[in-house]
Length: 118
Length: 108
Image (cartoon, rainbow over all chains, first blue to last red):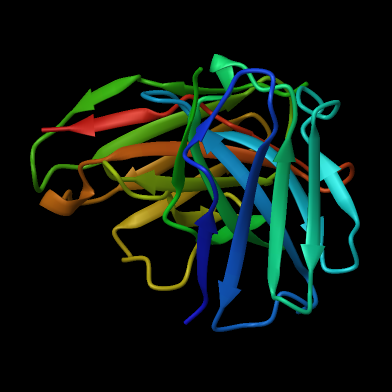
């Protein structure tokens, strides 16, 4: 069974960079037809897609976050990563990683909460 | 930018009843819509993709319909474990983009 697990700091200071990693187990991140995505959910609110990466490093980002987001993949470690720069309190959220199989998000990590605060 | 609008925000129903959740796209999105269920403290779970195809392991009481701008998620006979928040989601193939609705809370 495919599993995804997010990891990273739970507290980030304003103006700094949020960095998270998603480790994939039970399957290869290099499989064809798969993108790997990041989605976030502010407390008590809805879901926002951040961006996705293919195993060859090709990326797509939400236009509203594009200037601050970078997603990369490391196939040797079977994981992919998110960097979000210049964070503010508005970036406080639960961050999820997920597998994108032909545009359906079929496997999700459990989510990791990130708070932006000094 | 396509906007997905869900209604109602909250739906109160009883176990055993049918629930009908709506999602409207601001412009035609063909059948590029998925539905997710989210329970408190959990990640979303994929229910429906391509507007009407059930994901692996999803009970047959869940069904999706619609195309263009109007989409429906129907739960034919509500079980206690179905009370949750439901999100619709549009996807665009190129450039790749996902847009979620704001959610419908299904409560007793």
